[in-house]
Length: 203
Image 1: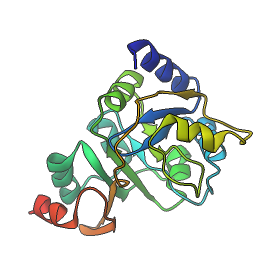
Image 2 (image 1 turned 90 degrees about the horizontal axis):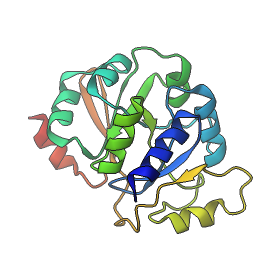
Image 3 (image 1 turned 120 degrees about the vertical axis):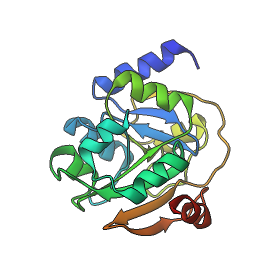
């Protein structure tokens, strides 16, 4: 993967397109999370029900703090386990616009920061948050190669606009999901990071 290819991916996202990109778990689908037309297109390309939320990757914690209500437990997890295969779900500060759309009206938003240099480069260069949903058709298996992604979208009318090929990824479970509300911590999905590791991080 070249710097030119990554630049092309960033430009595609900036222009409202859908990009396939590698992460520390599986391949993901990225659009500009602040662009309502792009977010709508993401749901349509993936074939995802609009009632289901989509997680987000932020370019900085300053930007993150503008969108969600960061609390003490979340800050501990971020400090000790970010970047990595973990998603934190927190209450939104502003439940409107694309944030309402991406949260499916739940009032909460999931965010993560994959430990992958390509992802970090994309959000840093773009300067805006991107979506972090898996690069597969809704209800289909998770994809760890671009070839598998192309096969899933072969018969679809709508397809991703650009593919960043990071090769064959290790078949890692989807990220661990932790919801924190009023300092109550609940593990919604245990993935590569165990419940015990989260407990230790919160001490």
